[in-house]
Image (tube, rainbow, N blue to C red; front, side, top):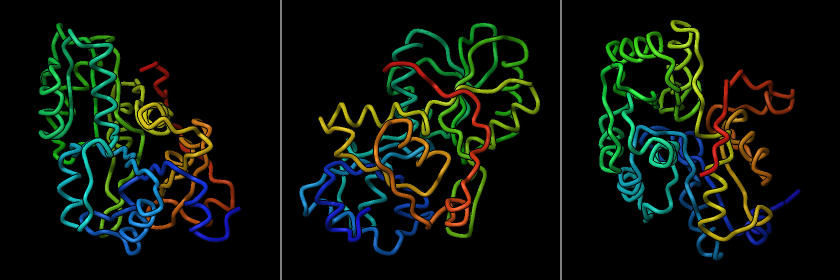
Length: 264
């Protein structure tokens, strides 16, 4: 166990940080976050922001961090949305995909050359649901119709039930999917954390080993579980969803359904 921040940073080379509830709450940077990021960089460490929030593109995060006085690059952000995009490019490049997501994320998928639609139909090959801050009832209807009338695969970016913001919590992708599951009797296959693929992608991209890597996040059932599945050390912060009481009492993870096991 490390007794001071400096010794931990010296041992680790790659720091994988969640954003919502870890670095920031809503549009507000958490106290001490900027100092921590600066310390990591000054010590020669590398940062990757590993977030299940698919409502924003990497470029959106770069702009947000700049407003906080922190310079970043798009390469430093690995979101469940970008990882799902790459997953779809590999396995459904020439297929038609029904997507329930924000306009920003849909544009990102289209920019990647994917054939997406918001309407159910016989020519749809799979369904993707994301954390949608622009969710409408019509989007839910189209997804339910597709999943009821056909047996196409159903994917979702992340199983998080709640997203921490400035006043508390709001429904995340996992809660949206539970509504759909209650209606159609099917569960999606989740692509983001706690499935370890995003961590593996960062290790491959940076050349770091699991021993050199630390994952920092606020959720036990996604962040801490992801670190466990990926074989890396993890650190729980108490600024978001997870609590010290849950950790001490042996938190029981909610049912997450299926986690993607595809090789990228």
